[in-house]
Length: 262
Image 1 (cartoon, one colour):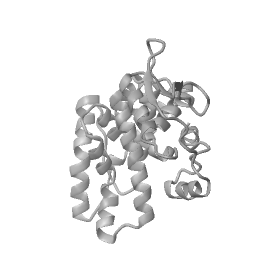
Image 2 (cartoon, helix red, strand yellow):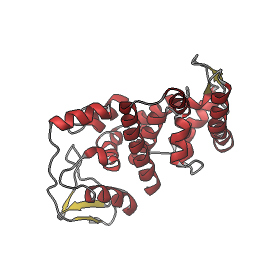
Image 3 (cartoon, one colour):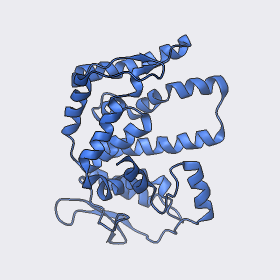
Image 4 (cartoon, helix red, strand yellow):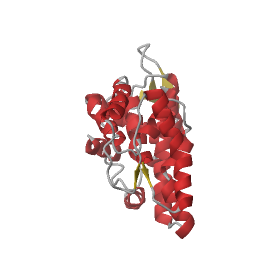
């Protein structure tokens, strides 16, 4: 299922999962020109919301009408289309790409995507701590301990900590508690947003804390990069790594915005 989601998010216009390489390919293949003037939203059937480009509904790559469950979600997509200038750059449209993925892929097998999120919980980023140096250990504890405290209080899930990268078997009760929590989520767009946030951060617990409003999305992004930021402070950062991170952050914030709009 993870491969399916990656394929759908890439699509013909997003031909490589790496944002830097994708940008290079797009330079060789000109982006499509903006073909519309007016962007609007509508609710033609009284239920789902759609985005209209010059009066015609936006469609997914699989040619289904892009139906969104709330006016706020439709407005997010509409704003991304309205923000396009002379050409349409899908990389600047994270909510639209995510909504497409939800309808064309996730909706056909929601359970498989939830199971993928649950697999992250069994080896969650916030459970694996550095042995040193002391400054990094302290930063990890400051960023990650509150997330584990939230999981224990809100989900009834007590996770074990490990030092280094050696796998630690988490209690069945802890993983099961996360599974019960996830099972209550069946909306394709919600599940897709949770999956994207989980995959980008390496942590199902961070994604679920953001969904619950217990953690701001930008704080979750910072928490997911404690180790990376520590290394950057020690050794610096190269331009390509910065570009990759910036694009991933854009996708993370798009997922968080869609989640909040549902």
